[in-house]
Length: 124
Image 1 (cartoon, one colour):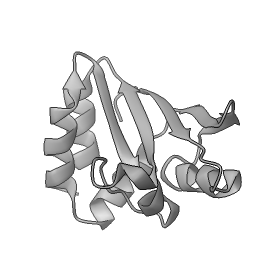
Image 2 (tube, helix red, strand yellow):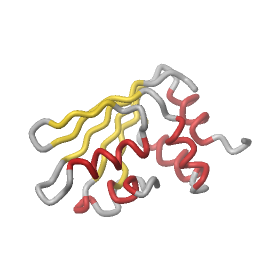
Image 3 (cartoon, one colour):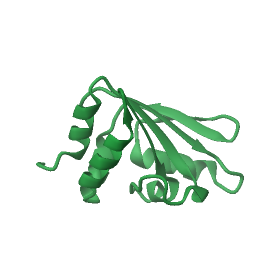
Image 4 (tube, one colour):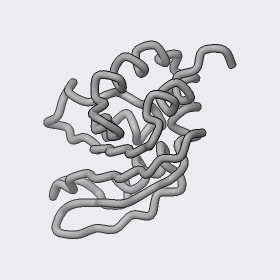
């Protein structure tokens, strides 16, 4: 896997359980170190292996490649995924229903195209 720095953030609404939102994030990024500040959960991670496995298992690698390339600026990808989908261990890229809340993800890499290729590689 090409080296990457992953920043994660999600609003914590009054009607949500802090533990459930943390659980949703950890199902996608198991190594994330999370903290809560002012109704927001933030954290950092370094491992994208689980994210990659989910893309493979859901058979959405082509869609993910296109989506991630569309959210790439320089060496940074910024995108969001659904909290609800993450809570059940799935990935649904943002924009579908932001009213339910999303997990914002920022991935920085010196080789972002190689990273996207690794995440979405079809041959394995």
